[in-house]
Amino acid sequence: MSEKPVGVADIGVVGMAVMGSNLARNLAHHGNVTAVYNRTDAKTDELIRDHGSEGEFVPSHDIDDFVASLKKPRVAIIMVQAGRGTDAVIEQLADRFEPGDIIVDGGNANFLDTIRREKDLRERNLNFAGTGISGGEEGALNGPSIMPGGSDEAWDRLKPILESIAAEAEGEPCVTHIGHDGAGHFVKMVHNGIEYADMQLIAEAYDLLRRVGGHDTAALAEVFDEWNQGDLESYLIEITAEVLRQKDAETGKPLVDVITDQAGSKGTGVWTVQNAVGLGIPVSGIGEAVFARAVSSKPKQREAVQALEKGRPEPVAKPDGFEDDVRAALYASKVVAYAQGFDIIIAGAEQYDWQIDKGAVAKIWRAGCIIRARFLNRIVEAYERNPELPTLLADEYFAKVVADGEAAWRRVVSTAALSGVPVPGFASALSYYDSLSSDRLPAALIQAQRDFFGAHTYGRIDKPGVFHTLWSGDRSEIQTEGSGH
Ligand code: ATR
Image (cartoon, rainbow, N blue to C red):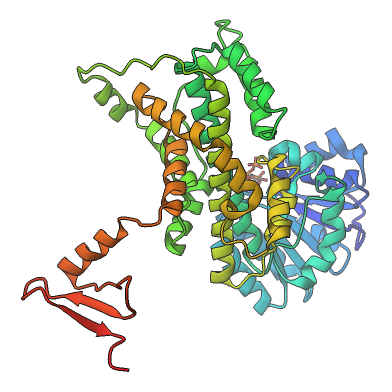
């Protein structure tokens, strides 16, 4: 690099591993002059060698040259390993950037780190936009769903660039300014949590159709293909059919049958559950999905219990209309999982003071990302009908889905229990629905127990105030608050 270009690039990307190089190519494909830099030069050189002709790239081997190559106000997207890698690159850029310049973190950062980084950089008059990018390698290259946080000022500058590279759903780019500081990474985290729940529910449907329905893998692929023609149409259902069709070259068996049944995870599902617990939001669908992966990955415990000499229940005879029942149970459980996912977005927005448009979030998830689905249009419509909806389950469309599927859902969960097929996702979704729809919950007993051992007090259904029974005394009731007005 003999001549060093100055002030020519619309945007820069730091980190030329898979996601970063694909995003840089996507940017260049859409007419953005794209500066590229990686700590190790070989990756930058490889990108230019293999893809340099796809658009206008400005490669640098030196961070100073990279920064100099950017037009002002400068915009650089960081696509490096989350955590220390991100902090290191932020520092390098912040030392060289000027007031008003924008650093975008496109990695899977924890939103609490994003809040911290945004605050630090704001104090240095720099913009920091933590941005969730979903869609994996393919999405990064051909159009991801993009969830930017950060300031309004940063969004004004980023909007046309991000719109140029985002996926499109019904003619609209799948990017919207989610909210300030960590809002983008928070919503991306919840997206991933919902993805866990969705995958778990699909896996349970597959297991039921296999073990109770008696379908072989080829027939299962057809069931999922058929489901993909209806309300369940989604990327995850579509790839499930494809996965089920894949044969293992070595054994000739369906590939899924030779894959170890221990699911891994990278952490965003766990973060969703940790934050939900803190916020007091029951995301049981996501929680069960995280736990189901954890159970699967405990071979010693599984072996120990399998070694016990006890008979496993025989699967019950396949009930009539079982496939339709499982489809209805899957759809109803999915409604619950998404309702819970939006609940945590609403709670996060309240806690961290973000203005999040729920309908806009559902819209940008319609393409580019892993949970893309026809179903998201129904969520958009639900929030259009009532932006203050207390739960998606109360929306007229979703209430009808659940009511229409309810009997099937109960049949499927009881069939699974009788047959010894674990369905933590289906069953907990049904319990959640039954909890919300019960006019009286056993929480009254829990309140009485708490009052008994800890004098935690309780409210009464027939009058206002706070009460305590003198459990270790004469067991009379006293009013501790709200009396004597
Ligand atoms: P992937 O997109 O493949 O998942 P990743 O593991 O998230 O990638 O991140 C790898 C990228 O982070 C690489 O570009 C790496 O740079 P090198 O090619 O030089 O290894 C970059 N990276 C990791 N730690 C870094 C650091 N401390 N400073 C700068 N770049 C770093």
